[in-house]
Image 1 (cartoon, rainbow, N blue to C red):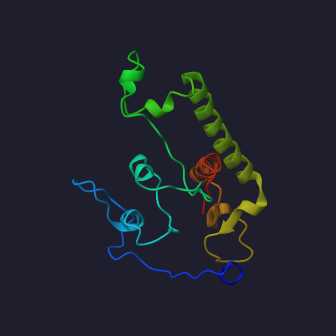
Image 2: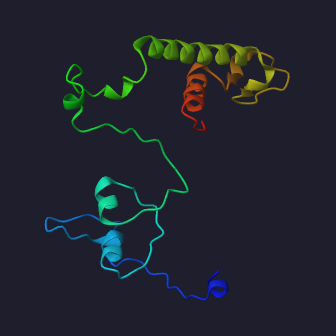
Length: 163
Protein backbone atom coordinates (compact mmCIF):
# COMPACT_ATOMS: atom_id res chain seq x y z
CA UNK A 1 0.00 0.00 0.00
CA UNK A 2 2.89 2.37 0.73
CA UNK A 3 4.27 1.90 -2.79
CA UNK A 4 0.85 2.38 -4.35
CA UNK A 5 0.11 5.55 -2.36
CA UNK A 6 3.75 6.70 -2.42
CA UNK A 7 4.51 7.09 1.29
CA UNK A 8 7.00 5.60 3.74
CA UNK A 9 6.55 4.46 7.28
CA UNK A 10 8.57 3.30 10.28
CA UNK A 11 7.37 0.88 12.94
CA UNK A 12 8.51 2.16 16.33
CA UNK A 13 7.87 0.96 19.87
CA UNK A 14 7.37 3.57 22.57
CA UNK A 15 10.33 3.80 24.93
CA UNK A 16 8.45 3.33 28.19
CA UNK A 17 6.28 0.52 26.82
CA UNK A 18 3.00 1.92 28.17
CA UNK A 19 -0.25 2.84 26.48
CA UNK A 20 -0.50 6.17 28.21
CA UNK A 21 -1.25 7.64 31.61
CA UNK A 22 -1.81 11.31 32.33
CA UNK A 23 0.36 12.67 35.16
CA UNK A 24 -0.41 15.46 37.64
CA UNK A 25 0.84 18.15 35.24
CA UNK A 26 -1.46 17.01 32.43
CA UNK A 27 1.35 15.45 30.38
CA UNK A 28 0.87 12.00 28.87
CA UNK A 29 3.39 9.18 28.62
CA UNK A 30 3.35 6.11 26.41
CA UNK A 31 1.54 5.88 23.10
CA UNK A 32 -0.83 8.75 23.92
CA UNK A 33 2.11 11.03 24.77
CA UNK A 34 3.95 10.15 21.55
CA UNK A 35 0.84 10.98 19.52
CA UNK A 36 0.14 14.17 21.45
CA UNK A 37 3.72 15.43 20.98
CA UNK A 38 3.46 14.61 17.23
CA UNK A 39 6.38 12.19 17.43
CA UNK A 40 4.16 9.76 15.51
CA UNK A 41 1.26 10.21 13.12
CA UNK A 42 -0.75 7.19 14.20
CA UNK A 43 -0.69 4.18 16.47
CA UNK A 44 -1.93 0.66 16.02
CA UNK A 45 -2.36 -1.00 19.40
CA UNK A 46 -4.74 -2.90 21.62
CA UNK A 47 -5.44 0.15 23.76
CA UNK A 48 -8.48 0.68 25.94
CA UNK A 49 -10.55 3.67 24.88
CA UNK A 50 -11.23 5.80 27.96
CA UNK A 51 -12.78 9.23 28.40
CA UNK A 52 -9.48 10.86 29.33
CA UNK A 53 -7.68 9.30 26.35
CA UNK A 54 -10.45 10.38 23.96
CA UNK A 55 -10.04 13.94 25.21
CA UNK A 56 -6.29 13.74 24.44
CA UNK A 57 -6.22 12.04 21.00
CA UNK A 58 -8.65 10.98 18.28
CA UNK A 59 -9.63 7.31 18.03
CA UNK A 60 -11.04 5.44 15.08
CA UNK A 61 -13.88 3.02 15.62
CA UNK A 62 -12.59 -0.23 17.13
CA UNK A 63 -12.34 -2.94 14.49
CA UNK A 64 -12.11 -5.79 16.99
CA UNK A 65 -13.79 -6.32 20.34
CA UNK A 66 -12.24 -8.92 22.63
CA UNK A 67 -14.19 -8.74 25.84
CA UNK A 68 -17.30 -7.95 27.77
CA UNK A 69 -17.51 -4.61 29.51
CA UNK A 70 -19.82 -3.40 32.23
CA UNK A 71 -20.24 0.36 32.18
CA UNK A 72 -21.70 2.23 35.12
CA UNK A 73 -21.80 5.92 35.84
CA UNK A 74 -19.79 7.10 38.82
CA UNK A 75 -22.61 9.19 40.25
CA UNK A 76 -25.56 6.85 39.87
CA UNK A 77 -27.12 8.26 43.06
CA UNK A 78 -27.31 11.72 41.45
CA UNK A 79 -29.13 10.47 38.34
CA UNK A 80 -31.46 8.14 40.23
CA UNK A 81 -31.65 9.06 43.93
CA UNK A 82 -34.22 6.34 44.70
CA UNK A 83 -31.67 3.63 43.84
CA UNK A 84 -28.46 3.76 45.86
CA UNK A 85 -25.38 2.38 44.13
CA UNK A 86 -24.34 -1.08 45.22
CA UNK A 87 -22.13 -3.93 44.15
CA UNK A 88 -25.06 -5.53 42.29
CA UNK A 89 -26.21 -2.46 40.35
CA UNK A 90 -25.19 -4.16 37.09
CA UNK A 91 -28.02 -6.67 37.65
CA UNK A 92 -30.72 -3.98 37.48
CA UNK A 93 -31.35 -3.95 33.70
CA UNK A 94 -33.20 -7.26 34.12
CA UNK A 95 -35.96 -7.76 36.68
CA UNK A 96 -35.63 -10.12 39.63
CA UNK A 97 -38.05 -12.58 37.99
CA UNK A 98 -35.90 -12.73 34.86
CA UNK A 99 -32.77 -13.48 36.92
CA UNK A 100 -34.63 -16.24 38.81
CA UNK A 101 -35.83 -17.72 35.51
CA UNK A 102 -32.29 -17.56 34.16
CA UNK A 103 -30.85 -19.39 37.18
CA UNK A 104 -33.59 -22.04 37.08
CA UNK A 105 -33.04 -22.53 33.34
CA UNK A 106 -29.29 -22.80 33.88
CA UNK A 107 -29.74 -25.49 36.54
CA UNK A 108 -32.34 -27.34 34.45
CA UNK A 109 -30.10 -27.39 31.37
CA UNK A 110 -27.13 -28.60 33.41
CA UNK A 111 -29.17 -31.34 35.07
CA UNK A 112 -30.73 -32.40 31.75
CA UNK A 113 -27.33 -32.63 30.07
CA UNK A 114 -26.00 -34.70 32.95
CA UNK A 115 -28.98 -37.08 32.90
CA UNK A 116 -28.82 -37.52 29.13
CA UNK A 117 -25.08 -38.17 29.31
CA UNK A 118 -25.64 -40.97 31.83
CA UNK A 119 -27.74 -42.82 29.26
CA UNK A 120 -25.43 -42.14 26.32
CA UNK A 121 -22.79 -44.83 25.66
CA UNK A 122 -20.50 -42.20 24.11
CA UNK A 123 -20.01 -40.23 27.32
CA UNK A 124 -18.36 -43.02 29.30
CA UNK A 125 -14.67 -43.85 29.40
CA UNK A 126 -12.56 -46.46 31.17
CA UNK A 127 -10.65 -45.35 34.24
CA UNK A 128 -8.39 -48.36 33.94
CA UNK A 129 -8.55 -51.35 31.70
CA UNK A 130 -8.24 -54.42 33.93
CA UNK A 131 -9.99 -57.06 31.93
CA UNK A 132 -11.66 -56.75 28.56
CA UNK A 133 -14.40 -59.08 29.75
CA UNK A 134 -15.12 -56.88 32.78
CA UNK A 135 -18.52 -55.32 32.11
CA UNK A 136 -19.07 -53.83 35.56
CA UNK A 137 -19.43 -50.08 35.82
CA UNK A 138 -16.86 -49.85 38.63
CA UNK A 139 -14.09 -48.88 36.21
CA UNK A 140 -16.09 -46.41 34.13
CA UNK A 141 -16.59 -42.69 34.57
CA UNK A 142 -19.05 -40.34 32.91
CA UNK A 143 -17.36 -37.35 31.25
CA UNK A 144 -20.47 -35.19 31.50
CA UNK A 145 -21.13 -35.39 35.22
CA UNK A 146 -23.22 -32.69 36.92
CA UNK A 147 -20.33 -30.27 37.45
CA UNK A 148 -19.09 -30.58 33.86
CA UNK A 149 -22.65 -30.14 32.60
CA UNK A 150 -23.11 -26.98 34.66
CA UNK A 151 -19.73 -25.69 33.47
CA UNK A 152 -20.73 -26.36 29.85
CA UNK A 153 -24.06 -24.57 30.37
CA UNK A 154 -22.47 -21.46 31.90
CA UNK A 155 -19.82 -21.46 29.17
CA UNK A 156 -22.56 -21.56 26.55
CA UNK A 157 -24.45 -18.81 28.35
CA UNK A 158 -21.34 -16.61 28.49
CA UNK A 159 -20.33 -17.53 24.91
CA UNK A 160 -17.09 -19.12 26.09
CA UNK A 161 -15.66 -22.53 25.45
CA UNK A 162 -15.53 -25.10 28.23
CA UNK A 163 -12.43 -27.26 27.96
